[in-house]
Image (cartoon, rainbow, N blue to C red; front, side, top):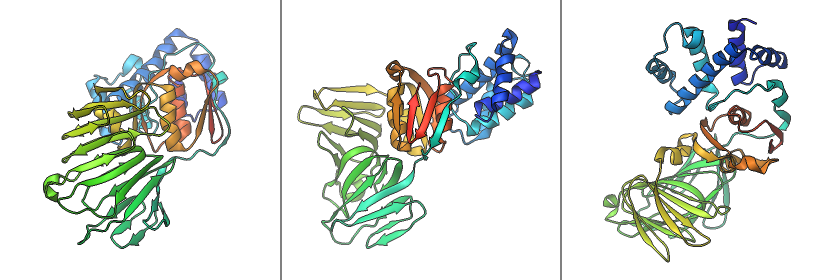
Length: 383
């Protein structure tokens, strides 16, 4: 098999569109050391692009990365310039393959097993519970209007009322869902999968604005207190309180996790509980262990920790068990590790939340930290 044919199959391999026969041809072609070098060049290029480009919707940005890498017309190790750009275009769709260290094993032996794939990509959906207990199902593409609230299927917006309404609403996000909420004071709240927020239908200027994150993860862009007669904004839950004056921050407080993580993006917040009152600076994360009440403050990569609200999963040296927990919520699936040691394997990658689960699992598989995977209905088995 010549280099041109091999390149075509390599592109198909990364996009999971190669046939069994083509995989056999690729495995035979890789028996030669010089061909392994060509293959590694493709993988390195892929890793370099994914690691440096976060806005993967822009193909032009990909080209800039390639130019900075000083890829000449002859290409890397003889790979043609046009083929590289064809490959880069494929990567815009099939993201975050990660760094794949080639082994000599037969690629055909590790083809994933798909019994019946019932796993769907998450979408905009939520359940609105009104003060009288009525449940309203909010789904993408459907509109709903009632009193001072309107939903276009992707977000729920409240308008300020002339007089205080003491009623409270709940917004519950199921597994496989997300939703944007705009409170009556103009504060925006992005709610992640498997989350629940309690909030008043309207606020009174000059009085403290308070909402309760019952469980889950939420990103807050708070309307400044200067626009509400100095009224502070508070987010409470069973374990801690967060008070702000006007800022952006993220709280992760899932009921099945032992820790609550509060990250300040910009502005100033105070996180408090029975034992501590901590002022955070932008870029800092407050970690509260619910079990032993221990706390810590760490500097974190804000983008990676909050990219979920922009449709991106960004992982850097995250254990596979933690990554699968995140993916399970978004894809509403269960994950089983046949080899428990794999749970602690680390992965680096930037994944689009719009991707089909098979593409994301292939991205992880191609890092060579797992052998293969199986999908059976809504269950993923990692081998």
